[in-house]
Length: 435
Image (cartoon, rainbow, N blue to C red; front, top):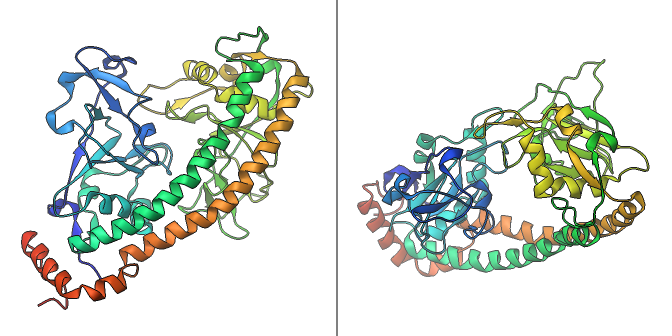
């Protein structure tokens, strides 16, 4: 059975814009008369409301902009294509709001909030996002486009059944990801144990400029590309989102069909340290180490390959060092651009940044353990791919009516009556086959 498609603007949900504020309006700690604001970084597997917050004066937040239980927070503007359209659902009321780079989709009583949230993770929605997200450096989903979004609307009892089944699959998926998250915390913890916090340098390591440990900085090429990833033997130019998570993501590329014969490309290979020189404030100065060889991919002009001086620094040590909040803030402080737009770090500014540098022998001890941990994490991720495949398959079947076909057949009379009531409540024509 094909469910009727209903626009968000037809009464199934409201789309509420976030609060616009300047850096001067916000503070980093809670104060009397201020409310916390969520940003794109708070949208994860769940909605994170206990950390990475800023506070703004309460007078700037309308009653409508207070987060309520079952609100769905969506990022609608980001320098990372993988972040735009990402959603998380509020499990409780929250005495706070969300920033202007996000919106809240507030479901009405005609649609189950979790059903809508699950659908916003489906392949159909991701395809819609890819078609409608606009912008070269910063991608945006327009409010008007979101209001015009078509959403499948089964009867309430079918929605509830789909939610029950997807909830069970999602619980398994979250357990897998929780295990992965624990594994990824091993290296930061080991780094702090061996070298201390770079921001305070409690072990008194020698302070050096980045130029003293980096032998070369190689920039990529700004190629004319297609709006899709490369396939087969095509070349692909890496997007900054290939680096921003801290793990190299080769799938984050755009196909390039023509390359001049005299153009030298920088193809990422195992052990390369990559650095994102341009992005939003939250994402700029991201780093990763490449874990394989990718001869058909190459760096864009917004990515650098940093090659350490032999015997001075190791790549995995530098990656972990540069990812530290204190060191990364130094990079941000030396960048150009306003806080609300793209930041750019010049090569000279990056190279003169001061960092603590422990003995090379200690760095190599960390490097050896780190590669072993990475291999273990990758093996676990391969096993976890089966869980993700199951989840994606269930999502697809859920919204084309396959997953609950037997249950639906047993309850067809009640479902048809519900569909008639739905159509009447939303002033929609009756679905085909319903009299």
